Length: 309
Image (cartoon, rainbow, N blue to C red; front, top):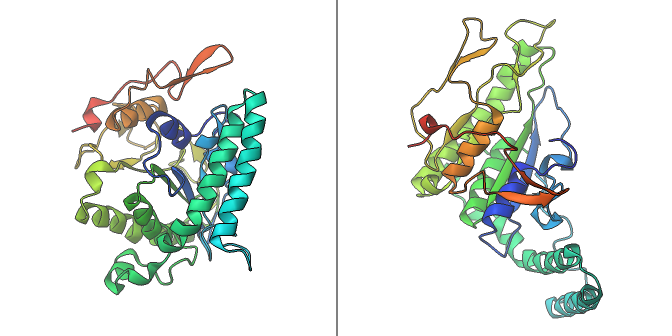
């Protein structure tokens, strides 16, 4: 993500709005593998020049998903409600004198935080998940920070109407030790990724949920010491659910896997296609910024019909 630019999740929340008032509309979950724990930062789910109410909210993968979600000792819910109302009353007075959308965002965030005190504990209570479901995902201990646990939590978030759920697994920067690191990373994610798709399909959620699995670039087909370097000329992602065409391999590389040569899909094309699958015209998803109509796909982007049913 270029600093100052909105993330895709922020664009989606801006364009489609939230489905639930009990949880944020854009939630981020992170996990880490044994090798290549590349850094992630808040700019990867930033709202950029969009209002800050559209930014992603990072949930913790270990322990409590949200810090301090409970009321302080000795503070009952009614007292907490009074505090929120008084703070928002003061913010409302400030809003009368200033044209600043961030004040309304602040008011909404206080209200959301209060509602999350009730919604988050039940969201993260995995005690009602049957043993077979934990085994399907490969969850050894709910809330242990694993990709598997995050996938199960992602399904629970989807059930509750969270618009955008983004999972990062930090285990793919294989500049060295790729023979050990790649099998380790695959073991971390393969079972849980397949389980999430199967679980969503069994619950009738996959048709209305678009899954994108991939990274921001590929790796070179030639070695770099004991690993591989970054490579942007050819790499793959997969789409599932949400109207994406199943059982389709789209595009091809040269015989070395070095460069995409057939049916090349740019990132702008991918974004335009994903927005179309979600019912949004990428050319009309705009916001005024520095006197121009900014959009996720910039001035480019073509819908790839071959990726759609």
